[in-house]
Length: 73
Image (cartoon, rainbow, N blue to C red; front, side, top):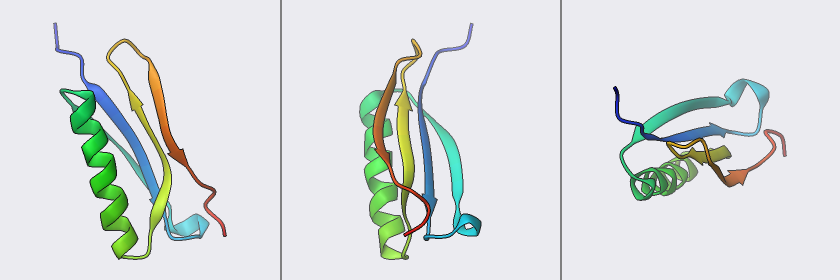
């Protein structure tokens, strides 16, 4: 049986529908997933993007909502 992972579901945008992107990343711990969220948020900000949404899903299915923003402003 495969080890269960924490999943960071994260997306970014630059204020338009066509600038949206998202992905899911796997981590061994919640802390690793959270650090990845913070690093992505900072990196995207430097290039004019913002977090569209970010959630961490635990191995038991529990979802922690970190952030959500509309893709228009």
